Length: 292
Ligand SMILES: NC(=O)c1ccc[n+]([C@@H]2O[C@H](COP(=O)([O-])OP(=O)(O)OC[C@H]3O[C@@H](n4cnc5c(N)ncnc54)[C@H](OP(=O)(O)O)[C@@H]3O)[C@@H](O)[C@H]2O)c1
Image 1 (cartoon, rainbow, N blue to C red):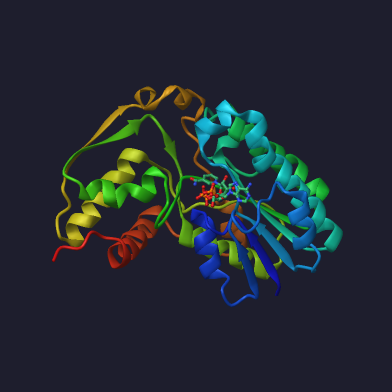
Image 2: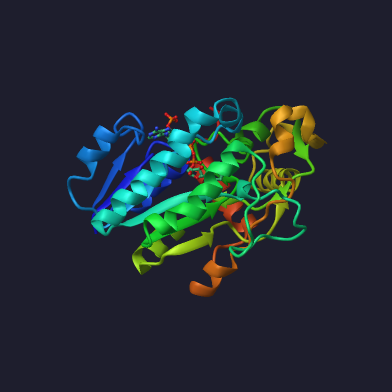
């Protein structure tokens, strides 16, 4: 299989690069391929690909609110152009979307049948992709992910082992519930779906709903049990409004039901606690602060 991966330098992109290493992969970072540049896309689409995976995006929520037009070029317009070019070639197009397509007031986990109602610029651009990509490229795979974490990531959950290693109290945002995804599992399930030739929209998260506080407590307990004891002496929830003005536009409860994926590949993605354990194992082997 000939696969082109864009956004290879990002969190998910790095795990995808590893997962697809034996798949004839061409993995390009932002420096090597800016997805908003039409002349670069002309070069990239001169050869024919079996699949094109777009992991490039601007995930900075506040940057999207401040610059809707600029971020729209990366998060909406460029993926739509990639979808058109994939369709012209007959390639499978893989695009990631987000739980932020929802308002977060549903009171239960969202399925693929639920209608998006985004509150934010970032969410609106993702909702547009969910609506428009299947028309432009029927051979497309839309993977709706949420709270992605992994080694070297900038997200709260990615940085958690380092944050918990530091002495003091860790503050987490209260009042948010959702589902998370270990980037290694995101890459693994992307590969399974690509290999199976699946198309359509799939919620792709580790199973089970959690909160930032519960996730942080589980990580702390796991780190203590593995030793040596981390520096964190307690976890406290603070109202999310203290984390900045943009927080009210983030859905309060945006958990995703990965049932469609589980029906296709039983039993589906592993539970979040199991995935967190795997991440802490990876972090400890690679990134944990060393004591001499
Ligand atoms: N992280 C999450 O919690 C989360 C949640 C829901 C959905 N998602 C979605 O999952 C996908 C992967 O996200 P991620 O977590 O891996 O994010 P990430 O770590 O921020 O990676 C995104 C990558 O895209 C690159 N990029 C930005 N603009 C680009 C452009 N014009 N051309 C080419 N590359 C560009 C970035 O480069 P620079 O770093 O140099 O800017 C970065 O390497 C995205 O579609 C994202 O929206 C992520």
